[in-house]
Image (cartoon, rainbow, N blue to C red; front, side, top):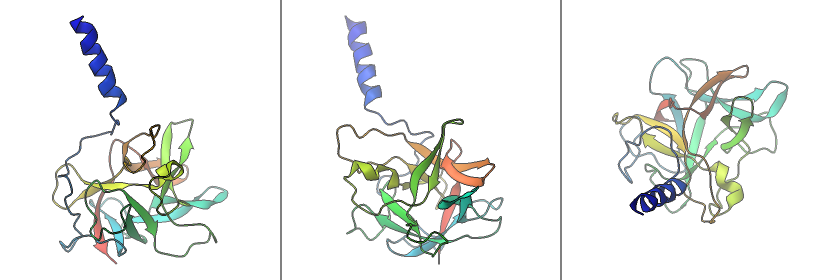
Length: 210
């Protein structure tokens, strides 16, 4: 009888836990800091620059012959890439904090007219089982399950001071069937270049004011 109760509790816990790859080191609600030591603010342009010198910042690139939508890729090493803007699910919040659900979009014009630069988890490779970060997402409307792939968050990178990682594990959807995977966002290199996607080894970043 005791064994049955124990197994039931383990199963219940497993079904209600989102499997985030890696370990969280971020203190709840901690303000994210930029490279000047100031709070990262909603609606302000920042470069997502690498926390280590062996890779570049972030930019946009097509995928083979399919030029649009554009994927989020690592720019040329040493290049700080394109500026982004963070918009929290709660638009009344002015400071970006750890684990806060945010839309991220590139504040630039592209060669894909009429398509948004909002990040989304949108390219799944069934051969490799990899999810990639692309664009064409929708801003806001956090309670809508159709928009669940548009939300990302920021966490401290393995306890390092003012060094961060991007993650996907949205908490904005209120639907009872709102199930999704959770993961750190890292670099996956394939025939299309160095793209952002699910990865146990997170892309180590800082946020530089534009």
